Every structure is written in structure tokens, then in C-alpha cells.
Figure 1 (cartoon, rainbow, N blue to C red):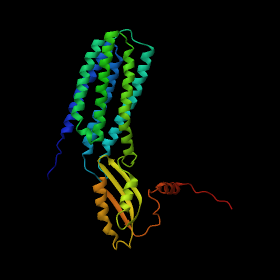
Figure 2 (figure 1 turned 180 degrees about the horizontal axis):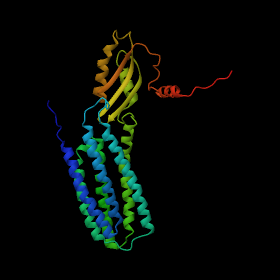
Figure 3 (figure 1 turned 90 degrees about the vertical axis):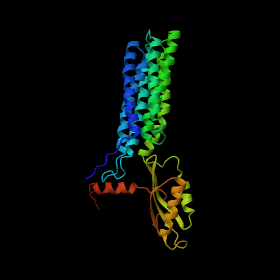
Length: 318
């Protein structure tokens, strides 16, 4: 019996290298932040610690998503990457709120002395390492939502390090330690602004929303322009992950235009594939249907029926 062994992808090696580099950054910044009393360095180190978890999650999801579909996971494990991206973006948003809390506290109780030059030196090393890890992930981030989440983490950390460098420079020149929490608040805005789009996109996929680049009305209009297609209804469009778009619908055929409704299947598939990039679809062709006015199928009746099955019997008095 032969056994196939899947070779790790180059992206897997890059994620592992990123974990090593990021681990070194975390240790250096926590020590540096403790010694110099710099909230900026400690905030950056905390963010890097969350990044370490994000990289681990991205690595695990990347390996998991390459597994084939099974009887229990008929869609495979492609959603693992989306879940990882959602968790990564959520932790970024929470991190921003926590840093904002510490920064506001530091504004009310400022530190008397922070060695700005030491802060600059440690943050410069962190910035170089963060940009390096982000560079390793940049290619995979273009099409993979999971890798994009890890890439975004590293880019946010790199820009945080830039902010800490500017903070250290300002403190070294002016001795105004209040710059430390002020820079942290600016970085919070950058984190939240950068994380929200990924949070929304991953949440939309988990909620099985229509991909944002597709217009449902336009798809229906084009389908109903095919000769022989009378009406489209019970339409569902969603994505398993950004690169895998699914579509199901019912199509009412005009029997006066086409003698065999199955003739419509090929032009429908061609149109959806060539014009909208939808390659995985299920089409139910019909010659009669009483529900043609319902474009989007309302599934509430299914949950209602299930609830009725388990409802306690009621006593009726006449």
C-alpha cells in the first residue's frame, strides 16, 4: 500500500520563520519596555505577543485547509482560514481597546523619566523584524484571507514600532514623557482602522453573505436574458472562502421557447463562470413552480416546523 505525503508549502516555511523572528522581538521588547518604563514598547510587545498567536493560528489553519473533504467535512477545511482571519481581526480590535485604556491611564499618571534613545533603538530592531515577517507573507496575503490576517498583524506591529521610534525621538529631544501615551493612542486608531475591513470581510463569509464584488440583481438579470429562461428564484450565493464562490438557484424554463429544459444548463453554467467567476453551482430546472415571485428563499418556515415538532401539546377547551 502506498502512502502520499504532502510536502509543506513555501508559505508554511515562511510562517514558521516568522514565528521565530517574532518570538525574538517579543522577548526583546518586553525586557526593554520594563527597563525603560516605556508604555509604547510594552504595548508593542503585547501586540507582538498577540501576533505570535495570530501566526500560530494562521499556520495551523493553512495546514488544515489543505486537507481533502471528508464525510464529516463535505466542504473540506477551507473555512478554517476564514475563522483564523476573523479571530485575528477580533484580537487586533480588542488589543487596540486595551492599549487605549492603558494610554489614558498613563496620561493621568505620567512617568517622570523615559530614556528616549533606548526606546528608539529597541523599536528600530522590532520595526525591521516586523517588516521582514510581513515581507515573507505579502505574496500569500493577496488571495488568502487567513494569511492576510497574519500579514495585517505584522504590518500593524511594524507601524507601531515606527510610532514608538518617533515617540523615543520626541522624548529624547524634549523630555516630554507624555508623548509615550499620546503616540499609543494614535497607534490605536491605526490598529482599529486597519483591522475593521478584515473583521467585516471574514464575518460576512461566516454569515454566508453574498460576496461584495457580486451584484445579485445583475446576476438575475443576466440569467433571465438567456432565451428560454422565464424566471429565477430561490437564489443563494455565498463563499466558502474568498476564492471559492457557491451558487444555487431554481430556474423556471419557458417551454414555448425551449423544447427540453435541460438545454438551458450549459448556457447558464457558461454565463456564471465567464462573467461572474462562479464555477461551483447547483441549478434546478423547472417547467412549473408556484413560488416564482420569491427570489430569495425564506428558510424561516423550516425552523418553525422544527419548533412545532418539539412543542408541548396544548389543551383546547370548547
